Image (tube, rainbow, N blue to C red; front, side, top):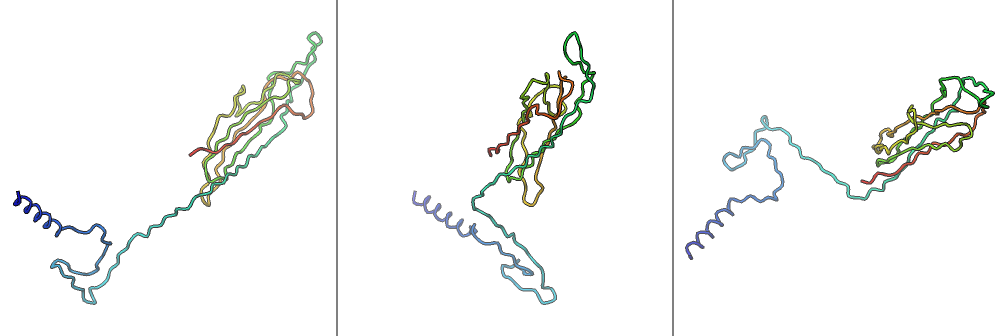
Amino acid sequence: MKKIISILVAAMMLVSLFAVPAFAADKTIIDADSSNNTYEGAIKDAFGGSTSAEVQIQINGDVNHRYAVDITFDAPVFTLSTGATWHPERHEYLHDLPVTWIGEGTVTVENHSDRPITYEAAAAVTTDEYGPLSIVFNGAATYAPIPVTEIAGCTVGGVAPKDSFTYGVVGTPIVAQLTATKLGTVTVTVDAVDL
């Protein structure tokens, strides 16, 4: 048993002689011959060269994120230019078909934050006094809200990411003439993205 222990100890000592420390720094020798385990410098005419090493940095400080969003409404007055005819038996105005409202509203959402944001939009008609009219998005025939849409965060020195949508009016009015008046509202809601 003592022989086995002695052999193991001797083997471990032999292995430790060939071990190379893992913490040694990178070292580059230019124009040296190490084939005989000695470094011999080169003569002047044969000497020269270069080497390089990475310079790494890191930043450990906390980031204070800030949010800023521009929401721009290009809000025209929607106009119906078709004529209306009074119907004496039904006691109502009939508009020439097809009924087409002229005008297109645009909403632009621009993210100046360093983090992504979301937006969504809804429309509401606040009166039925002028007939069964609806506010619609992106040229749709019927109303549906704009679903939650993500806009990327702004990069350092970059252009603020943005998205846009359009809105308009559909439906046949029950009045013959009307000056510019409120039909309803378009509401845009923004929120931060959880990362």
